Length: 151
Image (tube, rainbow, N blue to C red; front, top):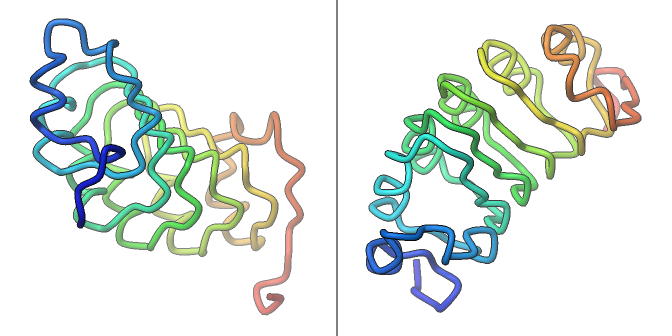
């Protein structure tokens, strides 16, 4: 990953350690894992909504956070990343996702905290059933239930 001024580094986190709110966390479009590991020790809301993608490795690290984690800028998520994030203890915001695979939905359905998926526009019947216990995402979505084979 190339470092830019929009990459959250460990150095930036440590420089703002006394007042982490000095950092506009949502303005970063990339994050180094050591920076997240330093942030994840704080049990509060982490707004990382500027991140546009999420690797499986990042998802595993992010799952260690025990507060609210806002990843609403992420547009797609792998089944592996979903299963790793599902183990997180705390609120999980993935409002940038418009679709989920059945496997990702099944994994996220096991998440024990609040789960926000307000960006979903389409789900298969299986994904809809899996996520039915997390009714909170339905409040702001108009979700179309599509047949599994529909594209």
